[in-house]
Length: 75
Image 1 (tube, rainbow, N blue to C red):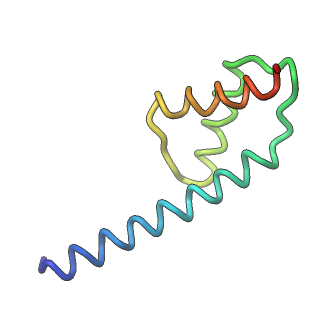
Image 2 (cartoon, rainbow, N blue to C red; image 1 turned 180 degrees about the vertical axis):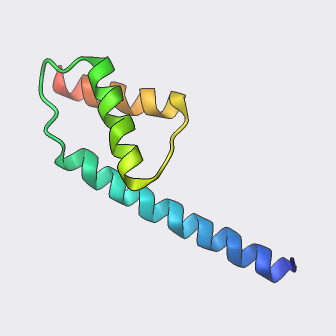
């Protein structure tokens, strides 16, 4: 592969990651999380939503996102 092809592929990958991230965020925003949902339930739900968009997050990032949602619900 030439440097031009590599740059093009990297740019395409970044664009795809951004699109998947946006779709995932939209699904998370639409999901009816409610006060009383356990942290484990939120993590499982996020994992399921990720599978719907075909994305992946590191376990640490997933737990961090779940904790943010959990904390917002239980203020």
